Image (cartoon, rainbow, N blue to C red; front, side):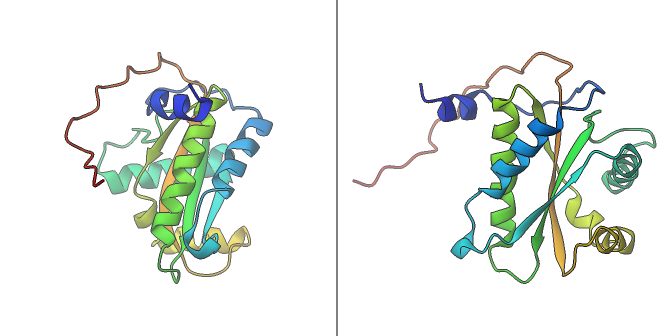
Length: 175
């Protein structure tokens, strides 16, 4: 079977990670995969903020936890040490779709490198906050950006979950 199709079939969301940071070279490959995602009219209207700084990652986890309504101390990133945050240009009509494709490419790339990943939501709510808008400006990101998702990445501290059976009745051929 083609390696890409194999990765698509096997990749699962991981909810338990080791604290060890993946190699930067691996994270760079995952980010590069995201940069090669398809985009509306080739505009490449999504950006990636790669967060490996423990303090920033912790702040992001705490605000995500608050937005999600969990008890203080819960880590919505399941211990993943690297967070690859995807943001999309608010002014571009297909930005949410483009950002979603970036997320998909990165999750597949992580799996192909033997790493686990999971898409964590609430980036939209986080990056509507002044604190996180200021953060973007501090790191040199200008413009109006909407949070699409967090690709939490790390070494799995669990077995790869089994692939569930695909639901029937989801394809309609018109020949």
